Image (tube, one colour):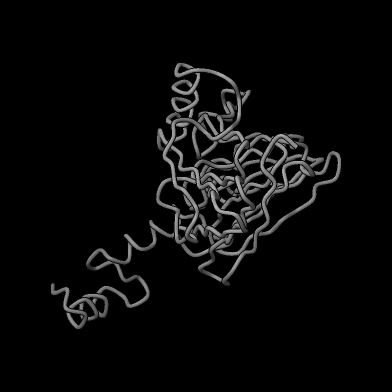
Length: 263
């Protein structure tokens, strides 16, 4: 293996965190802001790039960091290295309610494509790069932009998804249609495309967007039931005055008053 080999356990139900066990001189990498706690003897170091062990100087590291900026991630990653004599533990917490998904990249063909912001942490040596969609229509109308993340290597990586997560194995030629925001990730062998919903009533009144994502096997797909964008839009809608649809216009205003929001 080229990547550090780490042990782990996922703790919790709806608000999970992953505890990674590091042997002496082993390193885990994570996104800034995901750190939860660590044992004494672990050194934390902020670095450019994605943590992969590729040779190169400052220019190579700057290029790697620049690629991460394209998917909305930080220029920096944080490395946690066990400098002690025995085993040490470091934990990373999920940013919102959902599930943490462990990925053994060696068993998944060495590459997984995922939505931006899905990556949580990984063993040192895993490369976190960008994946351009081959078809222009997929990039323009995919709902998550032209660029997705790709996780490459032969070690462990961890994604996070909202709500419940379904792992689905697609047979060769098997195709499913899915809301673009509900895709967490898929293996490199899966063909990803966009399909127009069709029908003027569906387009205007359907409330589900104008495009489906289509995923065609063979390969593995991870699907989330509650994208963070959907959760955020519902919270914002509920917070607006006079927007309590379930209470009606009069009762909605009364409810706002009782809650202290006023008219």
